[in-house]
Image (cartoon, rainbow, N blue to C red; front, side, top):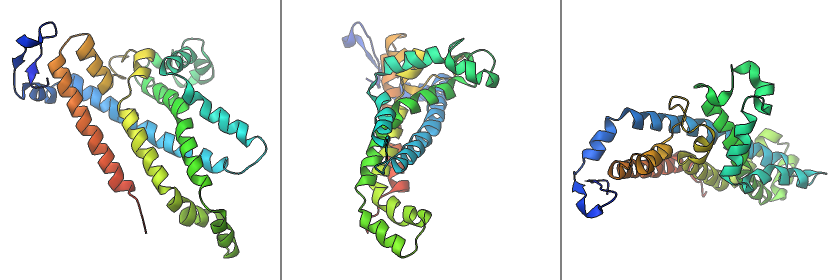
Length: 253
């Protein structure tokens, strides 16, 4: 399909155009804007999700009073659908909402109407929604680390940082690799939050690759060009996954 000028109503009349759709993609400002917005979103969201999930997993690992309740509270947003999450946070960031009441000194008006603050608002929404799942993954990994290793380390005089570096991280490395790769893949495919909260605005500042793909497929009916964008996104996802694997890696020694 990406090699054709696709006729939506009569597919048999579609015209073969070779690589013209890909050449057009490279010269399309809207594509590059969507790609940059997606990279910006992923660059902010993934480190926050990984960092917050890891801190929560380490902090709530011990069987303390109330820890089970806190684990449930942190995980519970993940069971919500993107529609519910988008509506909740759109209301919070609306005029008179909780977010604007307490953070109004940061911006004029509402963050979702600000070209600068709209993307961070979507990042906050996404981290609140998804961090609970990755927290559960890392918590399970932390609880699988044998406690006898920490007891032996304490007898050797090791401090918290050394135990974290030499025991916790090596044993949680595979789980961390999964969290980094999975969250990166999911964030590259972000659609629901900008669709529900900003409609890709203001001025295209939150239009992501998947949102742009949606516009091409369902609004302008440019299915051939949209397919080229989709295949390009697939290549990016494979490349990001491979890069994450190489950088984070696994150590079987």
